[in-house]
Amino acid sequence: MDPDAIRSGERVPHGGESDRDLLDFSANTNPATPDGAADVYAAALEDSRRYPDDDYAEFRVAAGAFVDCAPDRVIPTPGGLAAIRLAIESVLAPGDRALIPYPSFGEYAREVRLQGASPQFVYHEDVLSIGTDVLDGCALAVVCTPNNPTGEAADPDALAAFADRCAEAGTTLLVDEAFLGFTDLPSAARLDAEHVVVARSLTKLFGLPGLRAGFAVATGDRRDALETARRAWSLGTPAARVGAHCLRQDAFVRATRDRVASERERVRTALETEFDVHPSDAPYLLCDVGDRGVESVIESARDDGVAIRDARTFRALDSHVRVAIKDRRSNDRLLDALESDG
Image (cartoon, rainbow, N blue to C red; front, side):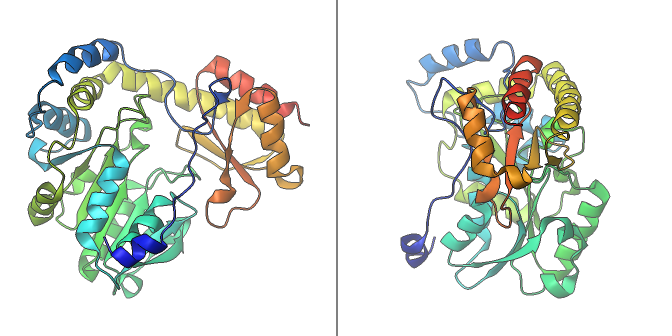
């Protein structure tokens, strides 16, 4: 990191509600966790009296199978954000430029700036159509799929074509797939290209955000660079063991995808009577609340015991909230809370 950039940097706001009496729809995490995860954690806790095996063979095998790549292409990281930082700091130097989508995850621009580099913002719907004329001079391009907070997933063919143009321009492509596991779309790991890095988070899909488990996928010299740069013992023993266990739970993943798809459509249909709702492939919906006002909607929901995300913290959004998709009973509480303000 660039020391001067660190001194002038700032933290980025995120979802997540500290008041445990509120039902939290501000963070997009699965309300369910796979069966057996607690038992795996308890067993791993005793083994945590020793350092983890830094090879993480079991975790790499499970992660590789999950995204359909060879295990040796997997780089274990303590969460998806750690994979993003590892990729960005391995690519960017002070003075570099990076193509960043907006509105999207605020940590991309923050991590770019921490390297002393400059973000070049591009509207999220336009990223995959960008040509080599714009990519020339950009050391890095970022794609978030599904995009957060808008929710749309990238078309795999369009993403592959964009990756080809990145290769022509000499641009590293970072694909953040934190929420892709909620869909049945293939991972960009299938591209198996040296200029492409994939970042994955386990904690959203498996409902364990406090566990901090994730991984990057890369190939060739890029893979070797990330493996060299990652911190030793980059996953604690409980995170590695529980992560490997969760990644093997195919039935849980299928059930989660079905529930999210069904509930997202039901919630979207209900919310459209109140707000302008963005189409989504993700476990969340972005809503333009219009004249009702973001603060009014958020405060009304809190009065009814529900926390939702103020999406004005995302670039170029000024009248939006974001709501997670959870189980049917919880979603009903969300709908009641939002409709009560009308």
